[in-house]
Image 1 (cartoon, rainbow, N blue to C red):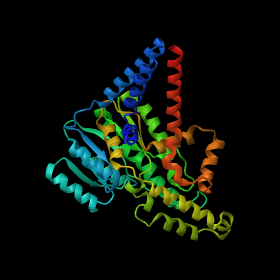
Image 2: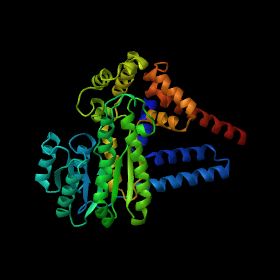
Image 3: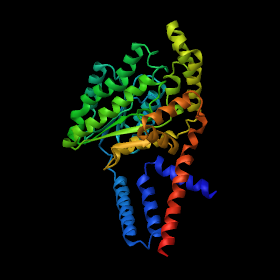
Image 4: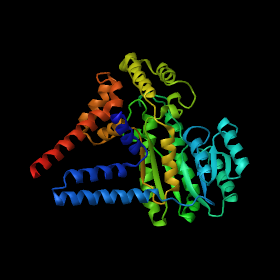
Length: 394
């Protein structure tokens, strides 16, 4: 029971982005263990206090009344839930939906009819005409404090397959929504955001850190968004505009990624793409390669148990916090350790790990337990070190 509560506290703290509070807790505890080493103790206490102050500043929020927020991709998923959350928080929400007659759009319209603070707008982010029309509507219906936030949530998943298998049409479709759509909407609404010194929140993905060979076209777009957000943040500093990136982990069941936006299941689309390949390419890769990739992907979908509210809360924090973080990495502890390993391990090792998972030499089922492989030994080593230091000082 104690172990379960401890794990829930650790995972909950990190998933809720309260890692400063958790590290502060560790600093004060180690300061107690090392109380006989005055300099180390003072340094740990100073670090813990700094983290606590940082945690306090992260809780400060702006007033929502009279501020407008535009959210794209509100038909379903994170965007739909975010629109409802921001509306309940008191913001005037402009919910952009690809289909203004979708079930999600209809539900949001009902909320808007009751309060008058939720406007549903049909917008295709790949259309400049739609974006211009949305801009005119927003300008005509802005609350007194103007447009405070823009959340670029609209996204397009891709047909699963290796880069060589993917037709140019798929690359163009995914880029049109995930990259050019974000840039088009941002450029249109930046003057309003600058005027209010507000916020821009872009949605990236954990795939920008853990490159997936079988989701290449989608992964490329998320890497572009990551770089675009970083550059935009630097450019907007002079205008006191905050630019935030949110990186969701494995939330496939909370989004349409696993079904390619409703166009069929992951396995169905992968096999359909395979059937369209040139015979020479099929012979070079082999059918067993396809089936291994489908198996890995389906296992990842099964492991997708993340609570969507974590991502929605991170997006909302980027909008309403007085001092938002530049980056909200919303993933389980195991996914974070995997991502950091892929980023910072030597390429020869990270490549071996990916190849091992693809070839089934490394069971995909161990992924949820990576946190134990990394975290438990680390804590044991730190505790042993503290005990040794206390023994020496005694």
